Amino acid sequence: MIKIGIGGNLGSGKSTVAKILAAYGGKIIDADEITHQLLTQRRIIKKIKKIFPQAIANNKVLKKELAELVFKNKNNYQKYYNLIMPEILKTIDKKLKEKNHNFLIVDAPLLFETGLYKKMDYNILVTSPKKLKIERMLKKGFEKEDILARLKFQAKEKEAKKYADFVIVNNKDIKKLKKEVEKIFKKIWK
Image: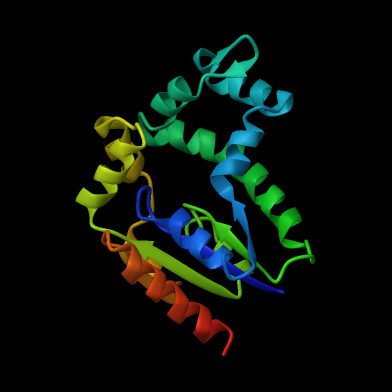
């Protein structure tokens, strides 16, 4: 079974590309969705409470508070990354073993940083101008300060391009984006 990784910074359009590809019969494995599920598990909550006690209330993760703490500085980010990333990768590995789909699509913001791209048959990097990324995330309800803090900790696209089989520049035009994805799909299944 073919595995396709899709990476890119916050607001680049990774999830949109994943959905377009999935329309061809693939199943999406969404790293953000996995993270949200993990943050509801008691054992993960206990680990977070040890590092960021102020991000837990009534045995639940306060996501806004957690994000503020995590993206406050590199040390906090690294602590959180070391806690959550092995769990995310373990869950993705399990899902990659599923055989009941035409192909699998891994939608992961940190596809290239984590080395997850090495487990894929093909990797797509989705890029966008910074201004457009910010615009998209503002529409999703993020605050500008939060967006800039998160972008600071994400991969430099120049570095990620070295590992990508395909690079898509997503600059607003959905028709153009669909055509780009279709071209990539045809190259993969030629």
